[in-house]
Image (spheres, rainbow over the protein chains, first blue to last red):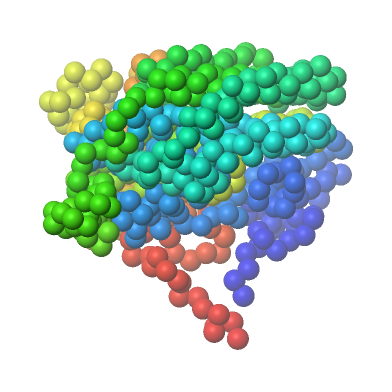
Length: 417
Length: 163
């Protein structure tokens, strides 16, 4: 049998198990209790196991154990063609698949070099990625509030999320695994009537955010469970590799969209919400304000959407139009080459970072000049952020661990890849 | 030695002056400054870049397997300076027979999990790492999945063996 010691034990972990997970002092010498939280626990939002060493209600040590959702996506990318691997990037993080599509497309385009993405495709990418941010923050807010006991929020947030998923379906035919952002532009032409669907949603959305804030900001239970909880100094967060809303709630104004603009983010007007309290409540406020800013960006993208092509004029990379493929010899040859062999990407390496709803997501892509990626490394924000789990929990109350965990907003698929 | 294209790069030039011989090669293709570092000096170099050149963030550590080339493994460090809004990539070549390098967990704590991941996936060992165990694969797993000689589909273990 190939059972791992890590995965077979029951609620109380043995000393031997702990030895493999981390280095907890032997619990038998004191009246300390070792509690196994997860891998299946509603508040871990996925398959995360945390071994907690408790002294009464206080957490003395927290050792996260990850890898339950490891699916070898990076390895699989190496046997797909460059364009096929887009579908794998969707599966990294089910709440920000478009951000993953985008960062992969951008990194490969950087590697290709002489490919120019038309403005309409760039703006459309921004619009969709901001919708993705709304989607992710809505799911986070709903489930986080549910963890802490505010059940109504969940229904409110999922109501709006449903509308966003309908918009994704309208664009790509898929609610979640969209694969809509491809190398060289978009997968399909934006559908007829998208302006109406997006406009209807985005005009109504700011008032919905007001509703959320009304429900939570004057809720004494919510305030007492989040304010002053989960503080870790900014220097520690930086040193531990934390990015995204968590670091902005600690007072650092750093957002990849502003500092290293990509996909014409420099043409949009938006603010970076920053708070300095550095607790669960500040993280909530940063994310809610980010929702307002995302709505602002979407509105600008909707109003100023450039006309023109939605794919790059690169016949060797982008599939030809159906009509041309049927009537022109050259287009038929390109079509055949792209479909059967895929396109070749010049040898080299590129790193591209974008701001996903969870933080810095960066793909380090290496090519050896063939039609398949040689190596795709995904620097996922959840993996980086989760390292701050121990300092966030240790020395605090067990009851606060749920609020602290929720405020990190990790997706376990994103951690394990 | 420092290539001409990176002579103007503040951090690279300062590093070359402070620790002569640490930089073995480099390039700035696609505007991404990259330096190859002698593996035995990696900790010294990282410490210098963090303390003196304000590369406070380590984005990630990863590796590339260049089988059948020798040296086979390339360990990649992705550094980021918030103050200068600059990214820098460090790389170290490691041969298969001696795929060991000093851990940089003492410089950035975030290196902990990334080094464990590289160990798990490539079998590169990090000396003086506080807890160099597998992180994504089960603890009794054999082989290192991201090595190029590791099969993509299937594993030598089969259900027939169990019966």
